Image (cartoon, rainbow, N blue to C red):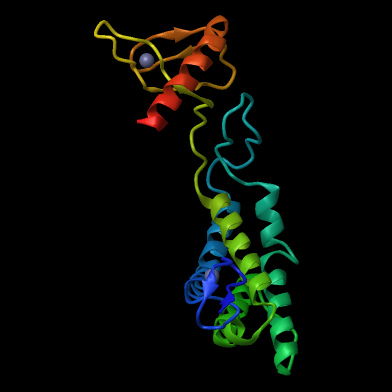
Length: 214
Ligand SMILES: [Zn+2]
Ligand SMILES: [Zn+2]
């Protein structure tokens, strides 16, 4: 039995990629052209571009970033995918015509060609793990650019340790919002100024230990 090069789990098929990772890689290759177009939409002026960064903390409303430009620019996603296409063509002894056309078309074609090679890649290509890992990272980083940023709740402190009249611990999750000096429990209303943090931490640790033991 050997080990899948991507998830490093034992694989009975004797391939470089297990069936699960092969499928996941196919799904990512199918999705990349769509993600790529999504990034294009982020770069299209949509009534607000040009405001630049917002002054005070918080996520910028328009996620145009250098990352997006890097992926869409020359040598970005198209170049990366094509370098894998070239490597596969080379190792399979296939003709290697140059990649031409618009970046969108190049991404489409590279993904299509790689999908066509997937059965061979999974079973016979020693580079399969590195290839699949890079496709996974690419899909992840691009989808994180497209996903709207989560509101910044700040730092998760732990569970509120205020005790009500019945002796029950509040237990709501406490957040320290960016720039704030006092942790405020949105559930029971208790405030935890910095002077109480050491004690709060001790209680949280004891509480966690008690929960884990239970
Ligand atoms: Zn695997
Ligand atoms: Zn509370």
